[in-house]
Image (cartoon, rainbow, N blue to C red):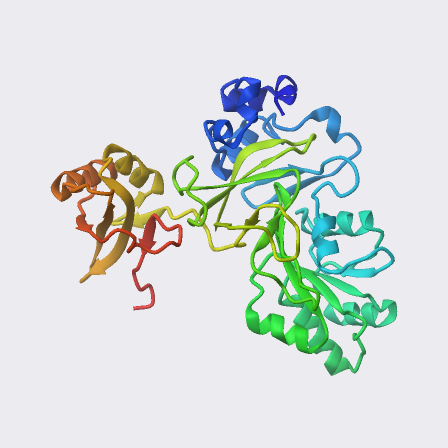
Length: 390
């Protein structure tokens, strides 16, 4: 990675021109700043389209995409640039399979992420895209694809439309889904129809970050396997600091993509590291999968409170092991309560912490000392408990 920096001055400037040893261990990597989506958008707006983070020589003859933000994403070089082939193979896709790809081919790289991986695996891809469900049913009934790729819920739409049209789609026996939650009831629905369904966790910036694997019966195993050539860290939201394994935090990814290397890119998603290797026998790092969003910036009394402000407060007080700001309503007014888990043998000064809370947020709030280990392990630094339907 270090040898790429002279060709990518924007990345070198962002990282502070690190020495090569900054990339030789996770401990050294953790000393570098996390780049979050807002930082990327800002860099791209100043130096469009890629903010000086992409290697121009490596992008010749390729594609560029636009995602909400707006964020520009380049396609990397070679076959399977977003590394989806491993996820497809784990889901049972094999060379010679026909794949019905129902991700959108419009603007964003979603469809191409799976399309490129499937073709690298030796599959024949039908670029179905989204919408036109009756035409998709007719196409699938004719082509008889073995597999489906797309969002979790759209496959059900296609199957139910096929039932109504009396078309046989029983050729579909496997699916790899992403871009939404695969709820247990939906997975069971597919299983009952003879479709083994796994999911992968992917972003437009990185590609496939992690994917499910299955046991010998095709049933999903716990967690997701982190893709090769990626380094995944879990950091405390609002900070650049890794959390202990098992604690929920923001997913931060370092990718070794030669065309578009991103170092400590904050996805804004929550997850946690799972202990031990996967029961499937693969020995790579595992995460729990997508567990929500880390961006907890919340408006209180008309002013935004950011997790960074709470992290800065915690850094002032070594007596604090963990903190969580709870936002609620008292009558017709917003209220803040900072819950504090004390460090071992520490006695936090609630009055001093309340003064610091007012200083950091410019608003007053209560401080509550709670028992060690009592705060939920959900990655939330700010918990908005206001009832917006009341």
